[in-house]
Image (cartoon, rainbow, N blue to C red; front, top):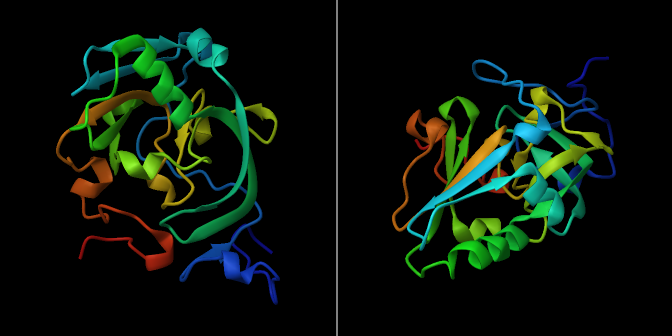
Length: 202
């Protein structure tokens, strides 16, 4: 039986969105090169329609409150994995640090464009990032997040398809108007709700 085998009569069937298949492993799906960045070299630039630009370091991230989250992940390529264990900094806690460094987030900052190594981006309304399980994740299953899965730090936005959780995160751009990210420009849905099967814009 392979990674994408279905589980017959699964008691968690109500946790699997339409069109998805439960998996045992953690598939690696990457477009282009996989960056190899040491944790201590990681930085995250915060910029856009905020009072000032700031760059956070790995040490800055570790100094923030750390949160553990167990959640289900749904990929647009139709796999779902349940009860994944992550650790990192809640985006809401990260926002507090941004406000401490840069002042209050202006009211016109309605959207966030996640930036990642290699020029990858994905867009989200800021309201989509305020759930308690949205993390800047650096640990998976009790171990440092591997590069194949987006380490040293990736976004974790469990409510939406997994492409909305940028691997190799290195920046947040705050926007007054929405701007499509990489896959959104190539026809992926702007929202990406797995329960609504929002896979493609058409």
